[in-house]
Length: 73
Image 1: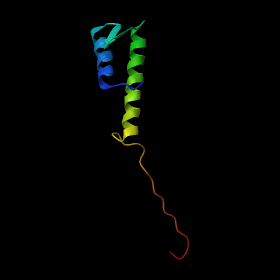
Image 2: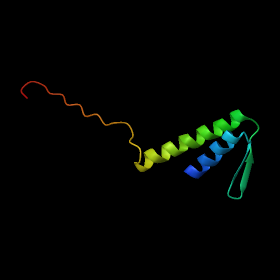
Image 3: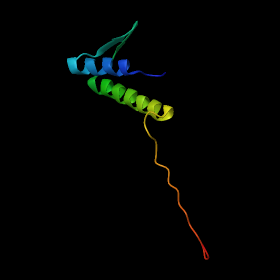
Image 4: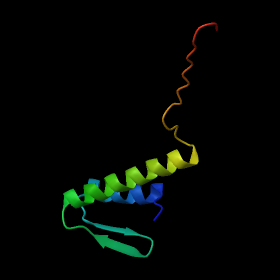
């Protein structure tokens, strides 16, 4: 599932308010604990970062070009 910034905002808003129930669109999820809610936030952030890297919005690992020469160059 591709997450959006709105998903992340809804999860973080619930965490700030102290709620364990998050509603987004027509779906409602109730988390058992704050730790479970924080794990969901971390998973969404990780997925958003991976989407940004895949689309080129966030640079990936820098390229390295190594040049070696032998005698005579």
